[in-house]
Image (tube, rainbow, N blue to C red; front, top):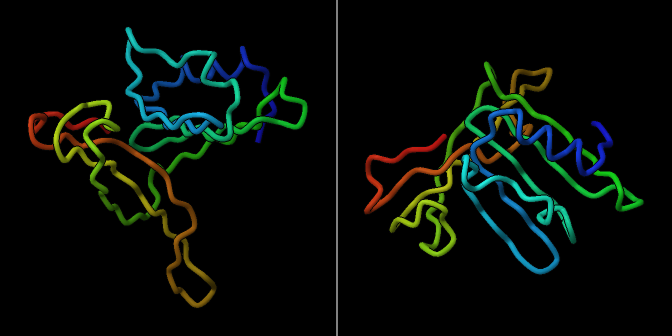
Length: 140
């Protein structure tokens, strides 16, 4: 876990190849696709409860730190880890792809106890699959 300033958070997001952002503030909940003409804005960090910046294997979890000048940032990398994938249908007006039946792809990462029993150790967002109207679009 790192404690970063607003500028450091924005730089980390900009330079890490993330494709999507889930942003929960006191007044709004956004799910956006990050691309050249739609970048993560510093205003998203105002009134922030939590943000998840993600792509297929990696996730950046951001929450405000005590003094509101810094943010606690945790990076997760699921490369080469066992997981179970699930898909949840998004409301059309909530999907950045704007298709009918677009799906949020979620991965439940597994770990194993000392008896070899599997359990879900971490759950993360990893992509959006295009539904009706976006059949060829898959963004992980």
